[in-house]
View 1 (cartoon, one colour):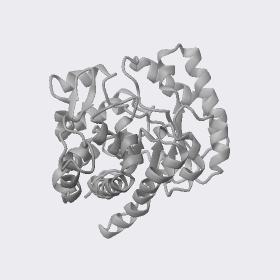
View 2 (cartoon, one colour):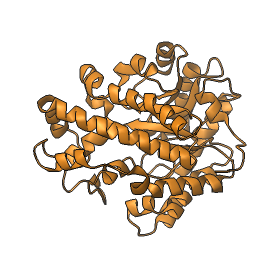
View 3 (cartoon, helix red, strand yellow):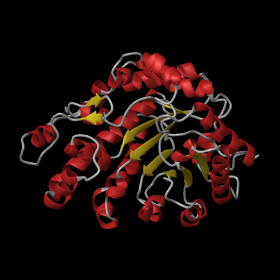
View 4 (tube, helix red, strand yellow):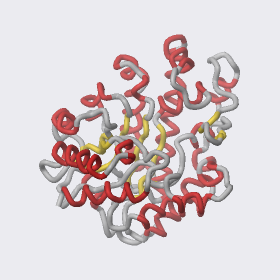
Length: 361
């Protein structure tokens, strides 16, 4: 597949640990509901309908690249981590003012649905072809302006959704599974991890130039439980994706892991086979840099909530990041510590980007 040459490869070079003129910048959920143009393009369509339409997903992906032209260094495909459970045969709906909902979550290894999910041979190319089409279309429309990021949810985070039936604060079902049915849990996590490898390979084949694995609920596990139910499956993805790409005749791409809340595992994550480790806002930048010891590029990590604050607060946050991460002109991708939250003023986010530019020149 032929695409226009990349004019701005700052993100890819930084992800590989190379020295760059300034830190590359992008933010999680940069395409989405805080932008007025998102609501115009989405119209009255269902969220997953937008994900399944390559044209709409592509339009939404490009909106922040066009609004913040010259300020950000990547696009991330508009999609959702829950397309994998959908491909596995589960129904997922996006409920207004509530978020994702699974009408029939997995209740136990004996409920019949678990066995059905475990036995299903998931044809990732057939089930998730709409994501591949959206990536190829977007990469074509980008015309080399910035790289395009593909992504998937991590096995543990997807597992939580599949057993909880949606978002939760208590994680009753997730904890029941890992402590009551550990073997069945691990079997399902392994199946999800294999699908993640296939799905990321599909995205790279379609044109993704860097991939990120989102483990949004990693912090719900204790260090011991993360070592059992989180980290092994993150490692499985990083170990097997390059091999799968080689089998497909494709070059490897940089890989990022973002394990939100797993501050205790930073040292292990730096040795988990990824090029980039994303950090949430619970990390101190200078301490994180010290722990990483140059093994990986770090990404992050401003509290998204600072975007509700005034400009002085944003400047102070950026100064802390720059001081902690940017001592040697490499090893940092500037980002938030989680996704852009609702009701953020797009011009406030623009100021955040501008301050990173100003303070790293």
